[in-house]
Image 1 (cartoon, rainbow, N blue to C red):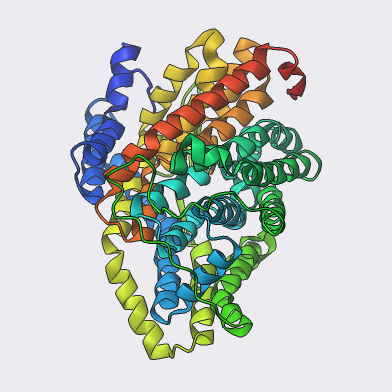
Image 2 (image 1 turned 180 degrees about the horizontal axis):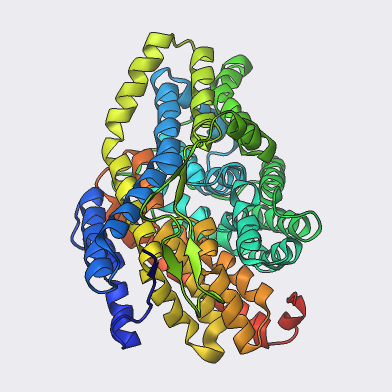
Length: 553
């Protein structure tokens, strides 16, 4: 039996919207204010979503359960699989002492904590976002920052803030490619349009990052280095997205930015060295600032050996992200499982789509091509290089799994919640509320992308969810479809720092378990403020010359 979604089940859009928001509110309030453990808050959100989907939206109970089940599978692979294996590698490098050598080598480039943030959280993280996405950059950078002595909230929160501007082109351009493929946008045009929005924020975010860490005065003291970092990322981001395509935007921009910053620091140093590892004017940040100590000196061979596992990781993640690699591995093993009782039995309805459209519900077990598998292989190779034997690797892997078991459960529950809201139509009700804002739509349409990423944890998923609605609404209002499709992706990047799965990844990488609510409360202001700035910029592009000349129609 085919079930058709309804987006105003109570005949009152305001009440329907408020009810549709209940599951997300339950989870966020549980995390941020009631201080519930993350898996408890996620479970409560999922339970409330099931109740509303079944009893308010009249979704058959079997379908609702299977939608949640499909989401849980997605939580395990690819997201949980990435988290498990990156933490495994981090544990190996910590236990054999090579991580300490790596920290000393970074401190050798600069012992100023603000500059370390620029190098690791922004530039290095952007590379991993471009190569892999799906939580990889936060997992890597948060683990490195906590190892460098940053307080848990600083390491977690600042990694999340930094992982914004690159997200639209993450995983070799997947979000933009998916937007174009699923909803019929011209790939070159929508990629270029995103590339005319985000470079401004690629310059702003490094300034914002250091301001969030060190305050206004601390930021002003290193403004030349911040400007170099941001501009050297923004210019390649614009050029590659407008003249080459979306696939290598972040990878090229991140490499250029890292190189420019390192070279700049050879000829420039701040007048004062910032040694604190805690957030300025933030008391509850999970730990005292560690006293500044001079980094130990190591010979070149030792430093190279310490960096080797992370170089191996970088190479493997990049190779695993290439379409040719994925196609090769999927040709060997990537069975697809139709979720019987759900596949093609849920229909999206106008005005979200031009005509009733059946939703596919297929789970692909792409274990070989998954980014997490590339990380696992790199961890095994790196472990062998570090001198671990096979029995020791197996023992450490078991210990890592036990360490992150609740984080994996949380990710499963959160993805179950996000997938259920998609198939039941709850998220579309929320999106339609944004779409009803008329002349203010460029602003609120941008926030729709922010909401999509906050709900699903993925810019790609948000583009799938709301990309079609953006196109329909834009055409009805006489706006450029490319402008609003790009705005969905550009606005979405600012929702990445508050999506629940990213927060769990950050808390797991830093070992700051059961503090997801603290992280959420810290990053929420930064997320909504930056998303609003993107919305204002998109509004200028829609209505105000000369910004309108940047728009591709």
